[in-house]
Image (cartoon, rainbow, N blue to C red; front, side, top):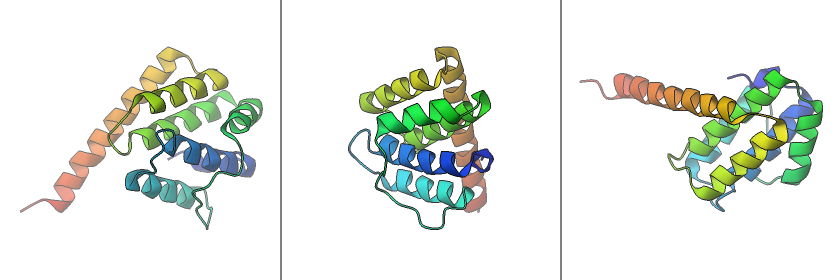
Length: 136
């Protein structure tokens, strides 16, 4: 939704972050892969990839260094949406998000708000899909 606001360098780092996030539980779910494809479309990345080029530690450090506060919130919002795309949020994913939010300076209160927003978005999309595709 907001990924077009990121710079080219941030977009490539974000893609690596997506891959690391999706693999936090050692499973790249179809829903996560589909969302990575959508993110690539939004960022004008013509060839999605599913293998990270940069370590997660380096990605977090570089994004923390080059991103503004709004950009950091965008990154966490979109990664949270990716983590919740398969309707599961296990301990490995929660740990990944804790490390990400800490490295980007996102407070627990901000992260709670982000999770609330993502939950509302997912719920609204579900309602819209139900309306569009399951009407008699």
